[in-house]
Image 1: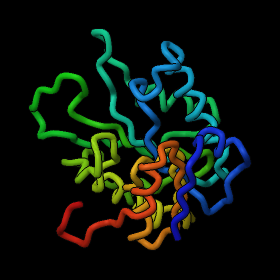
Image 2: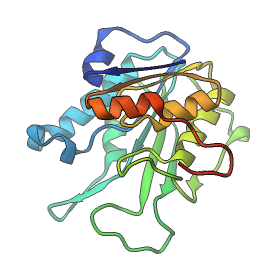
Image 3: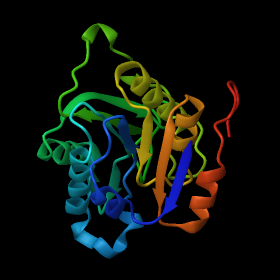
Image 4: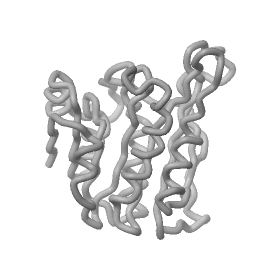
Length: 215
């Protein structure tokens, strides 16, 4: 099952708390996508992370895929912003993975060479003996420049199935729907929210590629 609605992901989240078998896996919009917020973007970002965490059941999980930016000669650490928001909602960090966007040692300009993948919950605790890799060698194929990489989505889906009661993945900023397609391929239901109509259409149609192939 996949439902993709056109609308405001923040307003959708604010409507009501999510059922216990729902998890959130998402990537919040960058400041470049929301120029109307100006210097208020960072505060908005932290508040939305907090809202997402608060709307989940105590043992449910929120996973955020976020790439830092270099802006006006300064580094904007989105991993730090995510942790601020999650902690304000009473959620605790379960794991923090570094996802390589390019091979190690590569110099990048506008964006760093890695992405954060962070998982939070209020009450869930993990068995250290079941830990998985903290550094992922690639983010995987991307359906567009701002997409969550398929390999990172696969890690999130496998974790939810193995360690949580999640059976429905919610992405309130779903873009073209990579996380939704990967969730469906793993037998999970998926709900996506996206403001842009053409992305909604793509998110409804996108299919996760067969093993060994990329989209």
